[in-house]
Amino acid sequence: MSVVEKEAREAGQDFIRDIVRADLESGRHKSIVTRFPPEPNGYLHIGHAKSICLNFGIAEEFGGHCNLRFDDTNPTKEEQEYIDAIRRDVRWLGFDWGENLFYASDYFEKLYEWAEHLIRTGKAYVDDQSQEEMRATRGTLTEPGTNSPFRDRSVEENLDLFRRMRAGEFPNGARVLRAKIDMASGNINMRDPVLYRILHAEHPRTGKKWTIYPSYDFAHGQSDAIEGVTHSICTLEFEDHRPLYDWLIENLPVPSQPRQYEFARLNLTHTVLSKRVLTELVRGGHVAGWDDPRMPTLAGLRRRGVPPAAIREFVRRIGVAKANSTVDVGMFEFVIREHLNRTAQRRMAVLRPLKIVIENYPEGRCEEVEAVNHPEDPTAGTRHIRFCRELFIERDDFMENPPKKFFRLSPGTEVRLRYAYFITCREVVKDATGDVVELRCVYDPTTKGGNAPDGRKVKATLHWVSAMDSVPAEVRLYNPLFTQPDPDVANFATELNPNSLEVIADARLEPALARSKSNEPVQFERQGYFCPDPDSSPDRLVFNRTVGLRDTWAKVSAAG
RNA sequence: UGGGGCGUAGCCAAGUGGUAAGGCAGCGGAUUUUGAUUCCGCCAUGCGGAGGUUCGAAUCCUCCCGCCCCAGCCA
Image (cartoon, rainbow, N blue to C red; front, side, top):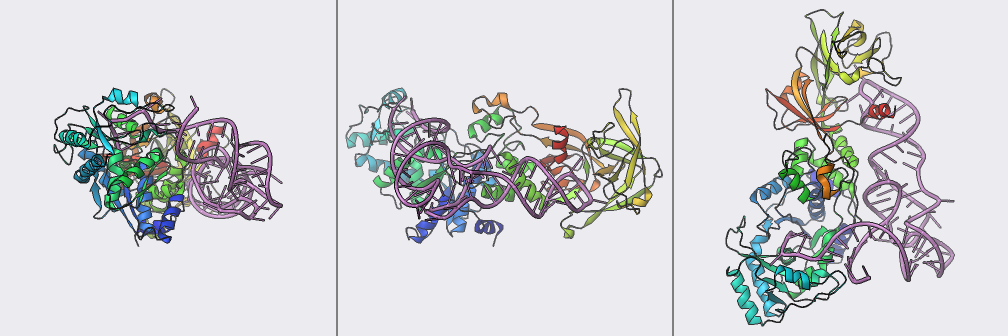
């Protein structure tokens, strides 16, 4: 049983699974077919992950299959790069579509035939009205629309015109094919919706073969029917389209009768999951690309170091319902930490180094101390770290005038250096401007390993690296892309967090970190989970912070 | 003022007539060589509101209030 299958068995209940289960029990379906239908006009984000997990998850859980189908009906917006990225990201998330990779464009010929079928049965017509005229005659939310003057053309004329549309005789926008339904319907989608429009554009897959392309409404349900999709699961904004979806299925000789179900899309605080806005962030240079670790894209999360299993677990926990909701990004971070705590090995790294000199430690001497790789997993083994006279500790771990609750290092206090010795700060060395540049300390040789034979305790344990053999690295810290929990999408540029990326140019890492594999997660003790960025190389190490550790001290100190 | 949906804790979310699951956050406390992890405890007399039906209502009925989506030849 694969990991994903195991997760599927533990999957929660929701109204869609209830429907699927009931359809199986009633015999309505013998097996289940779902599909994930992305439009290749951008990269997948965590909102898509919810849909992917739902569709592939249900298929696995109920013993059916899930198709990956590209909804590529608008060549003016779609690109091969996106197709490739989407395939890569779905696979990375942990799902396998096997042989079931499809494109709506695979069905263009069949869709065209069905359009002619609607014309022949008097249920579709070619409309010569301009876009403006159509808008004007569509009515409003409260007023019915009016029939097009071209609505009652003969079947012959409609067929002739539609064939000439296909032949490329007319310019973009000259005519459309419309379903003949009801211009007075309260549901605007039923007011003679457009089925085909003229688009002289090159398609990533069909090239220049077509000059007319089916609309979403005409392509989607019929593609589902062709593929034998039983449950066509989409987001709430398509609820209004369901009557049209059903109308087309009823009026066309399609090979199966799929049904559409809708759920609420995911929203996350402090970010934006609008493909339009994400595209603008990339194109406007607000981020470094689709895979910028600050982006909520799967490519960005991957680069940031978020494991796919954590994304799946997150999706499982948020559930599936029909109420609009915005999940606190803190819940996502919790799940990431939970997963990384179990899997990431521990290392020491000093982000903002402060030099300390152990005055009573002999010059030139060095010794090794043993450190465990994972406190909760003995099989992860141990490693040796060199302890010397000159070390670096975290600047934040020292305060010259500490508040009462601060129990790290300050003048005269004793703390433990993890896996090494107790030290006491004896003197603070400052530069001309008064900044602390070095600490002079003494160590207690009897405390090797971190315990005092006399049983005395210290409150704090600090992480450290040796000045001599630690390796320099760039560390990139990420903060939310938006300062507001619920950013205003209309003015997103003004709400961008100016501190979403913090680059630390001169961190110092314990030497073992120089051998980290790309993207391999590691915990920098007391700080957070990190992984090497693809920019990293043996001569220039670069680490990304995936997520920080829970920081109770930050809360206490902020509270004063 | 048309059509379609949705309202259960600060945030997600179970619940489908029998007396409000779980998770996140928060707050206490224990353990701790990561102020981490782990563990224990607390956290809705209440389910948008008001009526009604019923022995019994978050669940059924009526009215009201609030929020979201729809007037692309986007998906």
